[in-house]
Length: 194
Image (cartoon, rainbow, N blue to C red; front, side, top):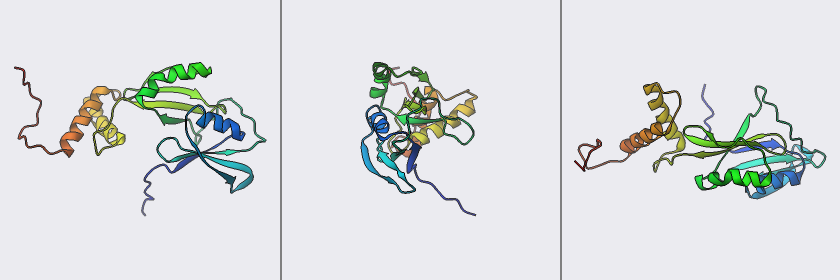
């Protein structure tokens, strides 16, 4: 038996209400360019809208002009989507509360997640949206997942409850040491000010 090895999220498809609500939210609030539209090839009464969340992959929405937006929270039963997290730069994240407030969108305020900051709110159809911003940049040649994997190892070895910035900093140092050669015979920390 062999795995079907995934390499990335190709796209996420959500069931929307009418077309304009989707455009107004995904592009008008979240800034995702509306890049493509065609009929839903499995349901001709629906349209299929495609939005670019910023990395060239896609979030797509099935729309139908007969459906009205319902802001009631979407189900969180087993097998249902709990929330969709979108990545923001620190520059944008620091303005997110103000920008949500100016639209009158209720939100959680900033939540400290140790390795990132988050803000939660619901879309016009009750789907919980997370705006997430990492507190670190991975070293060249590495991903956020590489840093989190290394930070997890450090955290569990130390018996700490959750990942914090010290685990991230130590993980980044380890990744750089393991992936970047040096002419020095001793890479340990030094005090040149003694």
